[in-house]
Image (cartoon, rainbow, N blue to C red):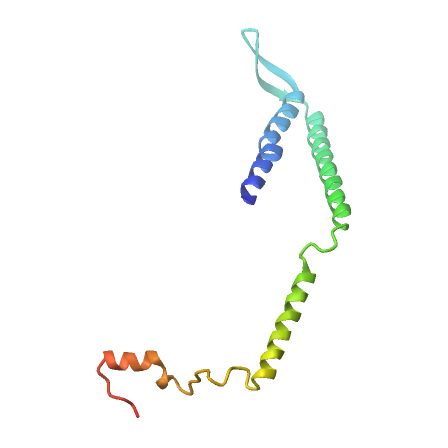
Length: 140
């Protein structure tokens, strides 16, 4: 959803208007237009000095506006103090540490005494069932 919104905004504010803006600049710098039956045709000769000034002036102006918006974002983003909610994570870590400490107090080994422990992979349920299915004798 975020990428879709970004794409829509970029198309509306950048990719659609820029050909219209720079096309108008090219038309404004034309010195001699073709005449077709009283209608204006294509441009034959451009005033290169005017074209250069228009292109660089508009580009510089748009970059200045962009820089102003970047500065505003930077200025107002300083007000955000806890964007990632790090305080909540610290509380969770403290709670998890307390649970681990309780387990260690109740069970010095870190697990209940009735818990299953396996010393080798040969004793595993998967290994024993595989051996039964494959008709392999017990390795012991």
